[in-house]
Length: 408
Image (cartoon, rainbow, N blue to C red; front, top):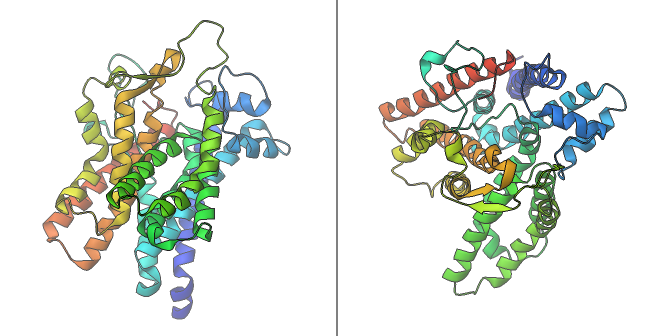
């Protein structure tokens, strides 16, 4: 029996929590698709119209989620089909994270107990959220003058109201970790096609075809890193630059198709079109204190960074996450969509991907640092406490969403 648990304990524990995660998220997504008299506010109504082929007033040229929902719609109601689609795609994120958490935490070498820890950590990061005043916990009332804003202007690594973000996240997570791996040695590889690069290119295209926000930021970050290395090496690495660069081409082609008209819905009135530039022009529509909003979103990752004395090169994933977040922050701060979409602040989706990867890599770095005993206990205690507070807020925020509260 002891041998059985050593071999299977990790898988069984993950399986139980995974099924529970699927069940509770299916409950939420089903409620969002059905609506229950408008109580569950999300983007689902527009997505339902798209699945049914009914004009919704918006263009969705990223079809993966809708393809799957239309297939399932052949066997059940449209509401159930879309809820099952989002549940399944969102659930894939847990599977992707399990692979990489087990790898980074060296589960095979450390035994099943480390695998159970890996599982607890990955599901905890899938429930974490931005911080908000702790006296909000357990409280909620509908929109009014004294509405308790949690998400508005701060944003979250887990936006439960946006199905396309959640549907694209498993592909984005796999691409993120693959990119970290490839950036580590692509200049030494000297090969045009490898399994890693083909997988990276295919998954990046899948992420783009599900929601383009991640690809916009990733392309900017990788482009700057690769260009810097090319210039630093006085163009000696031009071949490696091209060998990795061509893997982005399928996603770039899809982005060109999407952005040909993605920001122009089927609106009869005249609207300004295109991308605008202005410092915090869109962000300030949601909050009058952007620095505080940033701090409430990244306090835990920031603590991990500071207690490491800003040294992140030992953790390539953590370094890349901060670079990704920095690029997403700049894009959110200076870019906006003109016209009626300005108030949607859609560049925040890339920023929320940045938050998610900051939380994932910071948690992995903290877990490894705790195992090595490389920091004083009081420092580790502060970091774990901050993550626990993000978790408590995240569970309370999820409770609000389950109850039909506004995501704001």
